[in-house]
Amino acid sequence: MALLQTENLTAHYGDFQALFGVDIRLEEGETVAIIGANGAGKTTLMRSISGVLRNQPEAIVFDKDRIGSTHAADIVKKGIAMVPEGRKLFPSLSVEENLLIGAYGRKTDGPWNLESIYSMFPVLKERRTNAGTALSGGQQQMVAIGRALMSNPRVLLCDEISLGLAPVIIKDIYAALPKIKETGTSIVVVEQDIGQALKVADRVYCMMEGRITLEGSPSDLSRDAIHNAYFGASA
Image 1 (tube, rainbow, N blue to C red):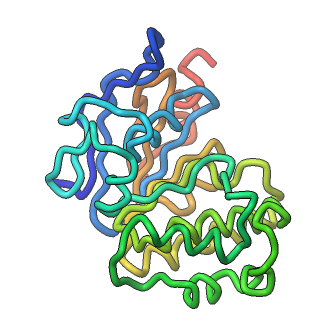
Image 2 (image 1 turned 90 degrees about the horizontal axis):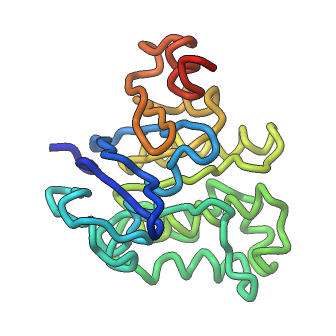
Image 3 (image 1 turned 180 degrees about the vertical axis):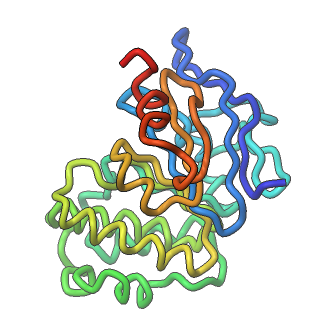
């Protein structure tokens, strides 16, 4: 069984159905990318896995434990942490305080602490006493990633971490993912940028209108197949 998988996952916002029978899997030590246009259901999938959006218990399985209805705080304790879309730093806290709060949810030994976060993102050490929201967008994204890593998760969910950032900053952010993977953390990356996703992923899922439309390794997926899965065959 995979480390993390969804099984016929559906999700609703009131009467609106956002996900329709989504099946994905994440193996130990793997990086999986979820691509798709805005509104495809990618963030809803991340919100479901992270416990922000509650589902049927059997719809999500993590390390053989059915967690679909588990509260978000308990999901973190189990070893799944999310870097949310929009970063969502605490504006009243400094950079270092924002990082430290990430460790409160899960007390466990692992490779990630303030020293290792600062080693990966040296600029954060320089700005550690600044308000987190006073940093540039790219630096705020580094804080959001570091905050999630402070819980030493087994699975890191990254929701649109390149959104709104300049290409040179995106390159720096994505350079951190192989380093994170080297520590044994499995990663799910949600991206609208197809090229960026294909560079880092072992496998890719494409979503459209709340459904999985394509799955495979980057080397096996043709440009036409990705285009059709992303936009629809008639696009």
